[in-house]
Length: 382
Image (cartoon, rainbow, N blue to C red; front, side, top):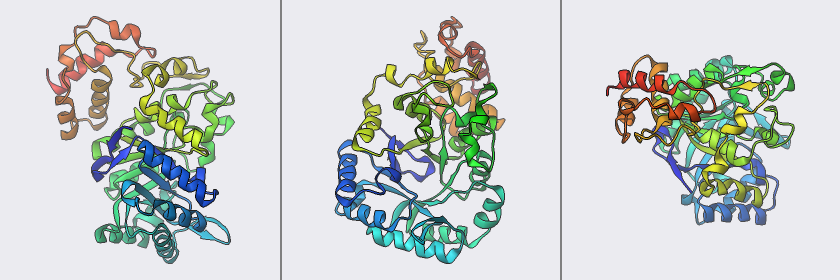
């Protein structure tokens, strides 16, 4: 298993994490089997959006004696009422629901305190940012009850506002090659609606790209939800027009700026093993470029997907990394210190480009790579 640092939190998380929906309705014995397999394979990050009390108790029992081996992304504002899940901003319910979570998990600390499901600007501004909810979350962080503050959203406009506020350290966001084409909106169902994919789509929505780049610049780590689009992207009915593989979806998400871990919605041990297999899969299995280039009604022409098909460079330049840092600098209008230092740490730089054009001949998306290398050399210095 590979591990990444979750932004400025400093937390080391496995590239493959797990969402709780897959074992939420299972008996304790099966929950324990999941946790056993996670421990065995090095999966250490668990998202806990569900407030189901029985699930929480079973997971807490399964974690007993090995709690320190896992990073828990525990949600606030997600409560259990009348036998079902509810989202709330009522501070009394938020506090009691979070305490119930700690009690049932058998812990007095969670690594990530995730403010649950904020998809509208009004909700962010009035019900979260400037409300007792944020004050409570900050109190929890100051007290050491949570290690860092997170927020989950499907709306890049809301997510960007939260990132720019400086109040969150982690963003849980829906990242996959189809949702990334869609503009910001408060109706999450539009992300998978058939009507949203009826017309030709060209390149990633600029707000989404700017969000990922902003997260990397500002040190906000991204944990990914819906990498498989609820399973839709893996089927013949995929909105992309072609079925993708789990490894392709995982690799796409993990090559976006700022992303640290993907919360896979595995519902069986076999599905979890298939996701974990990403860590040792050959590059040929992870490669999404050919599939993306062949998608009907979708074009990424001229847009660097960080797929790596430009390699190998005869000068040894990591073209994908240089392009990523170039895009980060362009989006900011200047060279942030962290971007400059990461660029400087590369073994070879854009100024070493031989302008041989081999990379452009291999690029499935017709990216003007030599032009980008020239521009990077101007921005960062030779």
